[in-house]
Structure formats: structure tokens, C-alpha cells
Amino acid sequence: MEELPDIRIMRERCVFCGDCVRLCPQSGEGTDRPVFSDSGGEVVVESRESCIACFTCVEFCRASAIVISRGPSVQDDIPAVFPARPFDRIV
Image (cartoon, rainbow, N blue to C red):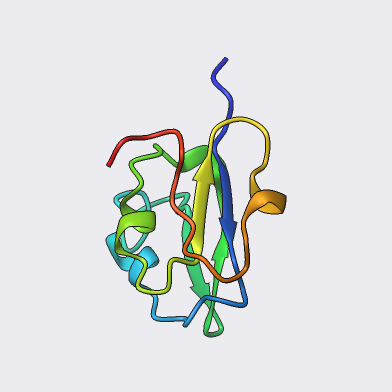
């Protein structure tokens, strides 16, 4: 069984634009189990199981507030001042 991606939204960086909800192919209208949802003006991770790790949310996040990794959590290793990008994929 493949390990689920670890999806983190850095609240201190998020500008609540909702681009991740609109651009994620597994979220938005018409999806049964969206990865992201915009509940009350706050973007939340609803279903990690639905994530296909396409990194669209990471690439188009205007605030660099989303981190996706496969494996141990990288949240503790991310400096607060620098944009976070996935390290397990060549862009």
C-alpha cells in the first residue's frame, strides 16, 4: 500500500485566496471527497486519501503556503521566512 501524502498548509503564510481549492483536480465542484475545501474563509485539508500528489496546489499557491511530501513530515525543517517547495520532485 502506498503511503498517503503529507499535506500541510502553513497558516501564517496562507492568504485565503482559494486557488488551491479551485485548481486542484481532486477538489472543487463535482467531487465527492475533495482534498481541499474553503470552509468559512479558511482553507482546510479534507481528504488526504483523494490527493494524487500532482503538486498543482503547491505550484500555483501565490503565498507558497502548501507543502506536500511523501514520507516523514518536513514541517519542522521548513524555515518560516523562505518559500517551501517539494524536495522530492524536480520542477
